[in-house]
Length: 105
Image 1 (cartoon, one colour):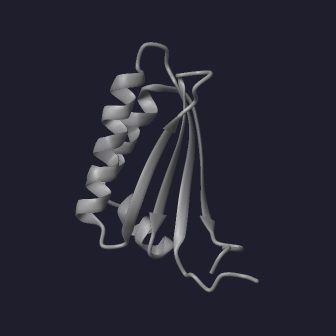
Image 2: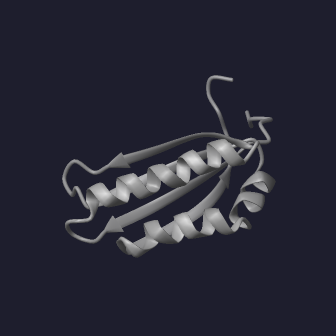
């Protein structure tokens, strides 16, 4: 059974430069707070850290609709903050998602 949710999700896979873990968390927090305060479509954000490799983080964002994400990404302050996260990393990969299945409904 496919979900009827129109929400969108983002995910990032981050490998932070050694010694920059705390700075990265602080910078990522700034991005998340900016989104929550400045984008009506931002729902929630999570950042998880790998227990085996503290340089590895995965981020999740929930949006009312991916169109809100597009609007946020077009804002200069969002770009400045997000690029600040990227500068602290050796590697970043990100993607956008929609719900294919949700259980229970």
